[in-house]
Amino acid sequence: MSEPAPPDEFRAWHALADLYHAYFTGLIMALVTRRGSAAAAEFVFRVFRRQHHERFLAGIEKFGLTAAPHAVAAAQYHYLSNQIGGVNVEYMRESDRKAWIRYPPPRWIWRGTAICAIPGEVSAAMLRGWHAHNGVSLRKPRLGFVCTRQTVDGDNGLEGFYYEYDRDLAPEERLVFARHLEAPPFDPAAAPRLATDTWPQARLEKAYRNYAMEYVRSALPVIVAQLGPHDAGALLHLTGRQIGMQFYPELAAGLGPHEHDGPRGFGEFLLGLLHAEGDDADIIATGGDVLVSQRAWSLIDGVAGYHPACLRALVGLIEGLLDAFDRRLAIEVAAEPGTVPGPLIWTIRPRRLAPTDDGRFPA
Image (cartoon, rainbow, N blue to C red; front, side):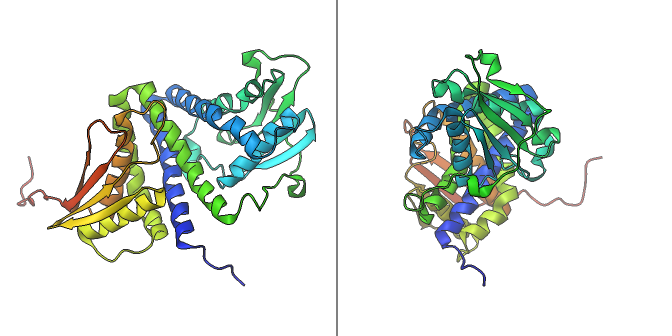
């Protein structure tokens, strides 16, 4: 007997998470192809180090790991936090001083065929940004991370272990590679579990959505600081348009049907997207135009280092979604000056099409 379909809200959250997941992966690929692997690696390092500072110690406490041995606590944190986001991950404890984590294929972050475009140094930058810093944050300078596999290098997963050495580690020793080692088998019965009383289904579903959105929340100010507002804004916008066009069908299926076509239909779609994000918004029809009023962009609200160029990501995504919905429509956004970042007014109207060709082509 099949399980009942999830509530509509849960389905919308999953679709939105997939969109933001794709955007984050696409942004890294855009950096690889347009700026080079070194720039992409620097970006990934900055994003994961930023997230580490914002999330790691709070997560150790939230998951009840404060009393666990440091290597075990670090590995269990990654096991539990990634499971919440829908990431396939394994955990194997060898001792109080050595605990493995393994991300078997398919790798969540490098969605689908994206795995073929990610250089090894970009994957290693993620480990440098987060995994190698756990000992520092835990005030355990003897704790390091040993990576034994990387999927982007053609290995059978990303894996490694936290290890507590007999001495304090120098910064360059906090992440090392030992390709000759291999993780032990995973035993699900020996892995930690989230308490169902504190992690009910609704909380898990919302956390799944937030997991993907948090990557984009962290990435936007990082890329603006790295590339500057002009270049970052252009890349954020282009990536958004491409991802929006590619992932419109999946998002539309998750948000559910709308009643109308044309400007009203896309206005209803956009309203559903914003509500799934947790944003307060409403829709107004004025003549042939449709206005969607968004009180604020909650994804980026309160983020340190926010710059108006970050908004180019959202604009690009919505323009790409509109292109896939109906290329004969146009959308404009107006933001009140001096606000961070909103209210936003989206105006949807028929696009003025270029005249048709009269049959003559340039020589």
